[in-house]
Amino acid sequence: MEKTSETTTEYRPFLEYSKEELAALLKSWGLPGYRVGQIRRWVFARETDRFSEMSDLSKELRTKLAEAFVAPRRDGENGETAEKAATLPILLENGVEKTLAPAETGGAAEVAKIGKAAQTAEARETAADGASVAAAPVGFDSVFEGRLVAKSVSDDGSEKLLIEWRDGARVECVLLRDDRGRRSACVSVQVGCAMKCAFCASGLGGFSRNLTKSEILEELLRLNALLPKEERLTHIVVMGTGEPTLNLDALLPALAEATASDGLDLGNRKVTISTVGIPAGIRRLAAENVPYKLAVSLHAPNDRIRDEIMPQNRIHPIAEVLSAADVFFKTTGRRVTFEYILLDGINAGVEHALELARLLRNKTAIVNVIPYNPAPELPFKTPSTQTTRRFVDALEDAGIQVKIRFRKGDKINAACGQLRWSLRDR
Image 1 (cartoon, helix red, strand yellow):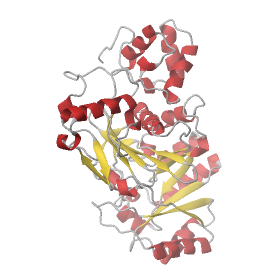
Image 2: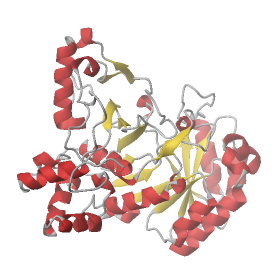
Image 3: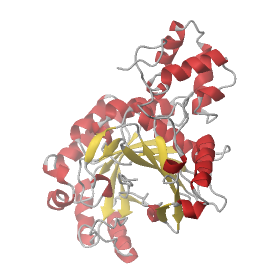
Image 4: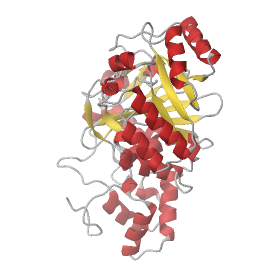
């Protein structure tokens, strides 16, 4: 592993360190423990992501932190050039993303100026007309590892970020707003997805790798930074790209930081982990008695349909998934939510609702009905409002508690099932 300074023998991102590990490192530098709290407040309270701006720390300590925690530059990596910056900003026009050409911005010098401003204020910067502008790469002293490639904004208040990591892999994450004051972060846990659910765009590019704890935390911190100072994240939904139960070793430590009082300070019950239904993963969540909510993507009332739209069901059929969900409920006492995407002509009929009701009879559960969010690459259709209403009515008449998830972010491909490893060639 490449050395980054005399203060550490190998590079490890700042956000990978737990509070205890950071305290041990600072102690080895001869520094008092209270410095840990100071540093974490700067990062988690949205003050700055840059060590150089942590003004209550000595200049010597700020330099030492940057030397220890900023990733080594690759050969020839000296920041953005005006020419490269000219291809980075992405604007949103009526829900359509596009790359700005120099002619549209006043030339490469003007684009470089925009990129520099975005670099200073990160994702909080917008163009004068309100269109969102992608930030340039982070500075050489930031706790962040990735760079913001694009930011999209929907008229419903949803904001989607595309982040590129140092190995070139990219993920999308979303900030969701509603009129009840909820500010939810929807985060990804993998680059791509191997589950291959037929109706979901997230797996179209295949699976690449798991995200690290620091990368998941960076998603949360970047989304939190989109909010004005008087607001904060209220919920986390692990419903982005990837299967959470296949990356629990990174996800659970990241969520522990997010829910810590000196982290993002979210309540445990404000966090939901969504899974396609990996029994071993669900049972691990039960065994570790995680304090979070569990959502299981069911999406079909029988194995025949589920085999067709969710290939994972051929390995772990519905009975195994429900058995693991029962274990989670009995162990933790927390009710399981079963997610059900309505696909017109496939699983959205009254007969399917009645079959689903029989499947969930006598279970302490709730069904989250999700009208399909279209993806242009996929052939499925959203059922009509009348079809959705009949489905919900049939469930409720059978004694099943139901919620309908309203579409958020669909205009910027940020709604349920629409995230993808996009813009790979830019």
